[in-house]
Length: 154
Ligand SMILES: [Zn+2]
Image (tube, rainbow, N blue to C red; front, side, top):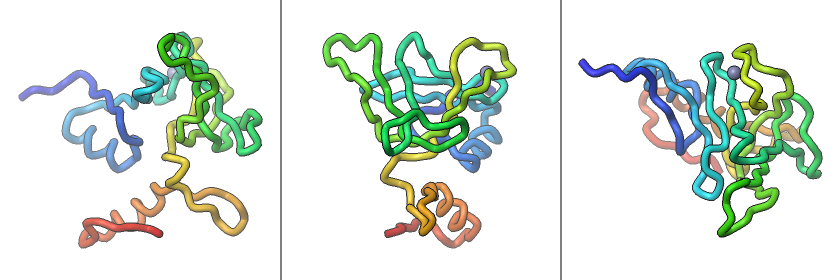
């Protein structure tokens, strides 16, 4: 039986239930965050933190007014790729939402941290109090019901 040492996920948000399924089949999953226009943004360490590859991109987590989001607050991911000379992107709003993380990681890495990407900006529902509810919430609700194969929230 082939068992990889690790699996790297990319492309979609690695939510809890996807991680569980992949880890049950293959073992440890390391979340990797990147995009076509800004590759290699961040990667997960052995302690489960997402470290920004600051040698590739300048990453900012900003609130709706464009200010730096406080620690643990959900904000827009804004990226400035440092090696894309053909098509420079400066403070590019990539369309993802993540939490700001200011504390150092216990793994000892000097790379800055960011919270995991919690979804696309268009996937969030604004509650009456103005707080955001991620699309992952609905996946959790409907996933419990085994008879639901697909759903759409409008
Ligand atoms: Zn770490």
